[in-house]
Amino acid sequence: MTSADRELELFLRRFRPASPPPLRPPSSRRKAPWLAAMVAVAAGMAAIGLWPPPREAPPAPAEPRSASRVSLGALNAAVREGRYEAALDTIALDVLPDPRREGGALHVAGDASLDR
Image (cartoon, rainbow, N blue to C red; front, side, top):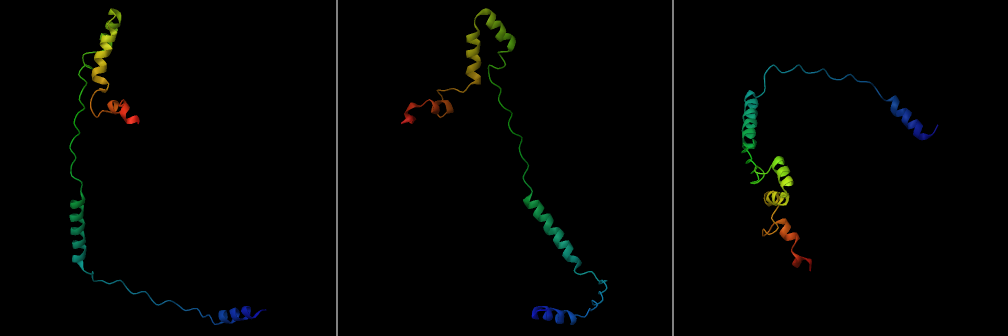
């Protein structure tokens, strides 16, 4: 046996189990009943202050002008009559972005001066 083993054995021999102290009975008197009311009022005020404002309904998307005028039937009739290119041009004016509009994505993409 080494000296560390002997020290451990002596330490363990000094151990004496002790019983824990008895539990205190619960207090019959409620502590600060006004505290619960104050916490409830503060929580209510915080909930009202942090509540998000009601959102407005988003505006309805605008319908394209020619989308209601040109239907699949009208496009089929234009194909049969040989004027389908004019019908497609009419649709394209309202559906596709205008490349000539200043600041539009197609205008910026087609600007050759930005390539330098």
